[in-house]
Amino acid sequence: MTANVTSQLERLHIPMKEAIKAMVRIPSFLVEGGEGYPFGKAVHEALQKATDIAADLGFRTWYDGAGYYAWAEIGEGEEMIGVIGHVDVVPPGNPAHWTTPPFEPDEREGKLYGRGTQDDKGPMMAALFAVKALMEAGVDFHKRVRFIFGGDEENHWRGIHRYLDREETPAMGFTPDAEFPLIFAEKHILQVELVGANELNIPVMDLGTAFNATPGEALYAGPHQDALVAKLEELGFEYEWTDAGVRVLGKAAHASLPEQGVNAIARLAIALDAIGCQAKTIRFLAQTVGLDYHAQAIFGRVEDAVSGKLTFNVGKLVITPEEERLGIDMRIPVTASVEDGISAVKAIAASYGLDMQVRASMPALYVPLDHPLVKTLLQVYREVTGDADAEPLAIGGGTYARAMPNCVAYGPTFPGAPETAHQADEYVILADLYRAMEVYAEAIYRLTR
Image (cartoon, helix red, strand yellow):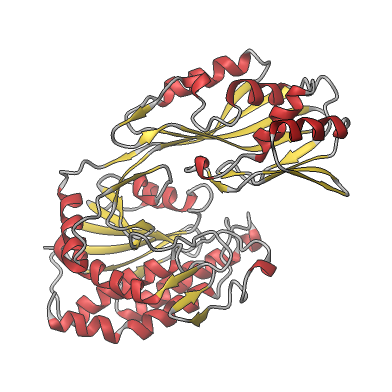
């Protein structure tokens, strides 16, 4: 990287940081249909702000005002390099768990705090200002560089899908929404519900927060609580008495890494099944899955050398007077068959009187290690950082990279750095973000040669 580009990057640190703060101040979590916009007025405002920032930097921008997506572009040529990210965020959760308000960015001890600083407003601004540094250094782009801002990444990807239906697909690109050195493989994501009639007057329950989260607690307010507690103690499962009932305790985790948590719904199901509960969903969960996060009783051993083992997470259990519903999130290795997985779950669920309904399915991402994009981005990372040891990663999570061909996830988190996305007190280490700007500037320069 030339000294001129380096000096421009340094000059842009403060403006980039101020742009992130402006984005973070917009509480752009999903509000379905809020104020006439598909994902809520705040997501619309965040898309508008992103294009305003890009326009001020000299990019050509487009946003139809509908609240789905926007883009900003620089350069000329037939071929287009894409930088794909999102302006929506997950809800902040309990404000009491934050040291400072989640949508009031706060800089302290070399970190910038606020919802979206790491996922994904901070990284998108870092990449945008990295290209601005190239512009200021007089770089002649031989291809177009387009930043694509989606508005619904944290939920159903409706923004990026609308973009792909209506706009040009980049020839190749990356999303700054994961880890360095890069993510070359992401497992298939399959979410299903198992549904059956509540024919035995099973007590009402509404457990778990999302399919893609391992529940850290599960409250039971039905009959036979004393027997349940006795069984929990026998099994060594943690619990606590509350005014509302017995709260079974586990450890929360993301569904892509359920083994890092302890599924409280599964613990509750195992104990209820042991004391004679005949609910279909309880029996299915206790007898065929239990605490096995790979569900080998259903699938056998499913793994590959590229992306590892299949994971199986029960994230929701809802029982109403009329029906039972069990929400499941599976991450299936990139070389395994999704159809085989669907058939296996469907067959065993039917034996418990449950119908299986596919809620969402996302294809795997796999860009081979010898692909020119992977080789270029990995070489840039190693040259800029001096880190020759970090290797490309395969993950169970999902990024926008899987939405289009020839795309990978690339930073912004460096190996060993804390991942604070979706957590209270989300933050980005500013020195790391400045280093990521260097990586992005060099990467985009080479991809446009």
